[in-house]
Length: 324
Image 1 (cartoon, rainbow, N blue to C red):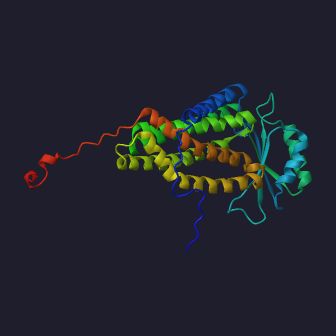
Image 2 (image 1 turned 180 degrees about the horizontal axis):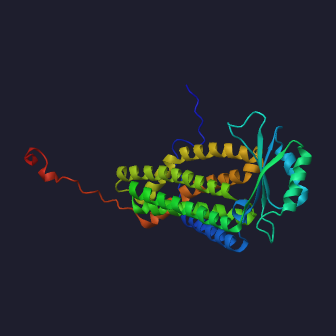
Image 3 (image 1 turned 90 degrees about the horizontal axis):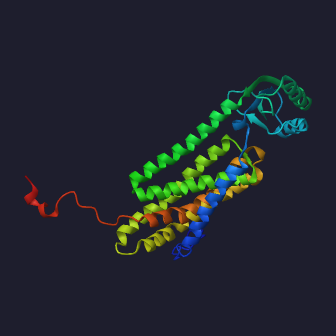
């Protein structure tokens, strides 16, 4: 007999509406607190949104990102991001890195003296390094990036709203989008509370969280739609409980295996991807919670039309008499 791992029993009877007011109230509270934190503390924007200077380097020796970072750190330049660039077209002895420095106070870009100091510090670590280009991004471009990122998140929510509306009913669409807004706002709120760096990689994480969360929500809604046909006279609250219990094993397994991979990356992945992985880890937890405790509560409050649809053909005219 094949061994099957079961984190949740096949048949559960958990009453997810037992603390309905408490869980929904807690969700609303988290959203309100997140909005207050974002408005009062603000976000710790990274170079992508604050502007800064990018220096492209090339060397014939293997790049040690930690050594580069240690060399630049004594200069006290604020947020410095160092990443190695990989490209299959590069020769075997061509190693490329990007050094990004945040915009300094009172200047839109790094001064020539500052660039020279950075180059000297890196060259002391790797004498073979050469500096190919120096580019600056001003606050205007960074402001446009913020607007584009916000529009991307709003467009994703609008597309999901339209998709759910077509596939189910408008009540499901409102519940799904309310859960997604909850996930995004709470995730941004934790970044404001902890003052973690917020850059374009976090926007990518937010869009990924939207896709992950809506997948969980659609699974529950799909089972709910099937059960509404199966249990025609059962109260909507009870049908929802049955639907969530029937999909609980799938939800726990999916979220659990995803979290195992994300926590491994969070611990061992290093500084470059830590912000992205943290956002994903938090988003998976919050997204799973909202699929169970936010989306279905909204649908319950709005109600669902359970009246059977009228047949396209009148039953009285069906049969051989209806054939011309």
